Image (cartoon, rainbow, N blue to C red):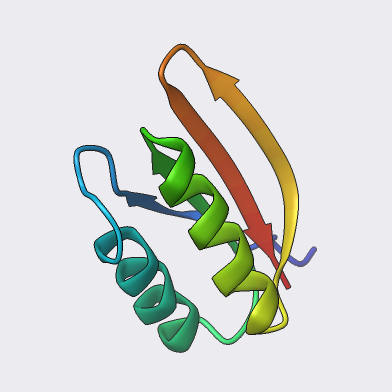
Length: 76
């Protein structure tokens, strides 16, 4: 039975752009495929991380807001 790779978490709370985008781009480069969960705490970071991931061929599979945070599930 093949195990699904666990998603990796990039916690970018408290960081302002471009730091969250740079962290996610680094993780995307490290992981050629799979799933990455990104946690951000502002709208600008949410938009920029989503846009940057899509530009690299990753999709935003899920986006949910929890209080002042957004949890983005990126996958390829």
